[in-house]
Length: 63
Image (cartoon, rainbow, N blue to C red; front, side):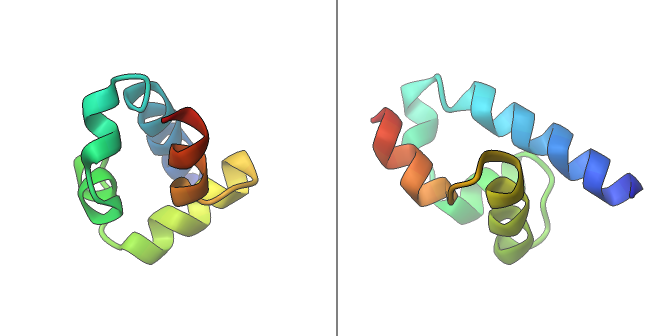
């Protein structure tokens, strides 16, 4: 429960950061590490749970 809340907050940060086009050039691993995820897999899972899409798909829609 606590980890889920923390991960949701991390995803909120990612969504805000993606408004800066420089962040769109980061790899998924880079983005995950910048906001505190230790694993790419956990990042992708948390992102999909919050947004309904993967980070890669999301990046394509806003670039």
